[in-house]
Each structure stands twice: as structure tokens, then as C-alpha cells.
Image (cartoon, rainbow, N blue to C red):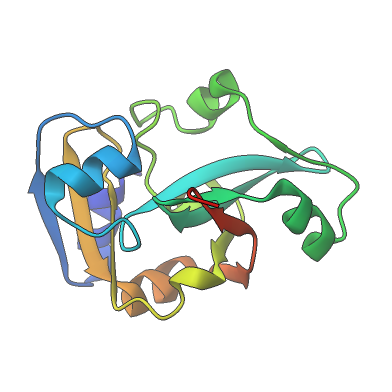
Amino acid sequence: MQVLEYLKKSGVKYESREHKPTFSAQQMAAVEHEPGMFVVKPVIVKVDGKYVMCVLAACYKVDLGAMKKQLGAKSVELAEEEEIGRLFGNCELGAEPPFGNLYDIPTIMDKALEGDDHIMFQAGVHDKAIVMKMDDYRKLVKPKILEFTYHLGS
């Protein structure tokens, strides 16, 4: 199910915005004039061989070691592009929305996002963004909250 269809059915309020194609969350933040801390990106990792979606701010990176420790996992590694393409067949590669629940993938959200009032993310394509309240996102996705990132400037 496409994320826009899912959001329409859920009844939550959201805004859909069109912009020139962007190929990273940081680019989308710049084009949309939105602080990077409110623009989220999903990063797919394999935890002991099983896929997990990590949702984090555009200006952060996943700390695989921290994730491994917090999850008590033997191995945590980034998924390959071809794996991501198979998992999210109805999305443009690199424009996956942060809704692991739509793809039967557990979702973990970075604690740094917890206090945000809203989020923005790619809508499955490179030229469309969605803005919605963080509370609504959390109600729909029910992500596990962990601390697993570091700032790109770090």
C-alpha cells in the first residue's frame, strides 16, 4: 500500500508537498526550507539477519555499534541497495517513507526525534514530501524508541 493511500485511510491530517526531485533527506530539507531535524529518513539495517527500519533525522547517521548493543544483537549491518529495492518495490529507490509497518518491517525511531512536533519525509517518490504531526506518526507506526545516532558534524 502506498503511504498516501494509507494516510488517507487512517484519517490523520497531513500535508503533501511537491518539489523538484531530491535524492537525500538533507537535499529535501534545503528545497523545502525545513530544518534537517524535522526531516526524517529511513535507514534499513539487518539485525541478526532480519530487516529493521531505523527512522532518524536527516542530519544524523546510524551508529551500528550502539544499535547492536541496545538490541543485544550479534550483528547489525546496513542493507544493500538491491535488498531495499526488493523490500520497497512500490517506491523509488531512496525515497522510501518511514513506515516499516506497511512493509512488515519493525520500526525503530531515534530518541532525538521524540520531542519534535512534526516530521517531513519522502512519499515514496523523489519529488513529493509529506508533513504530519509527530504524535500521529507515532500512533500509526508505533516505533520502538532507542538512541542509535550521531550528528553528521560529529
